[in-house]
Image 1 (cartoon, rainbow, N blue to C red):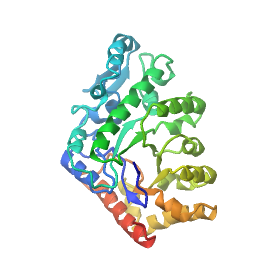
Image 2: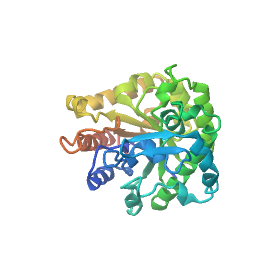
Image 3: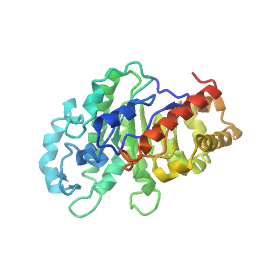
Length: 341
């Protein structure tokens, strides 16, 4: 199992498309493809809803597009769910919850350098879903341990399925909620998040990475037991590259950094050129090399991606497709310049 670097391309999975074929075509246009998540196609594909399939206590209201939790319902359903722990397919994503996932699994992707899946992480899911008292379920000592176990099984069954297609398959754990952990406003401390993520990661098969678009404590993330870290370097690159010691240690452990350098929202995208994006990335890399990180090592353990997910402008302006194409163009240019295979 090898996660490729050498500035190959991938992207975030949440996409604005309602046309399933168009979304899948875009995802397959990158070096390391993934199966798209399409919340505008169906509320089932909202990243929180999708991750919560079969979780005891969940209350899904499709007409109102709301997701909540009942502790009473949790108690009623937990034994039934626990009894299915040795039934892998129970923890897989059903066709109802994804229009694309099973189509992706039917493709021949053995010749790709890698493929990728994803699921919402326990911190973000636990903070986003509220119980009957409007309290995030991550605070409930009865619910949280079960959530960690439940999601780890969801990660592992998906990764096993992907590895049947490509031995270099890996998973992203999407954790947008981590940025709020360090805001001092969530009530869920960084120590609690570290404890829970370490427990969760100890249950998860490898390779696995964390993706987020926000700005957490990068020391915290870089020192977790993960293989990949994906971030928005348009917004957070200068801050991220100031964590030199942790970045060096992460690279020395074989970690891969996914540099999200290409904006996907239409206004910032239209302000950029390939030259401006290239200049910004090179400036970040130069900062790290001046601090003593070997450039060859850094680039060989780096990938490129758009900066963030985007839920607008799919059919009208096609900004997502344009951002994907620009990511590929930039990758080809830099790979040629740095003689990367």
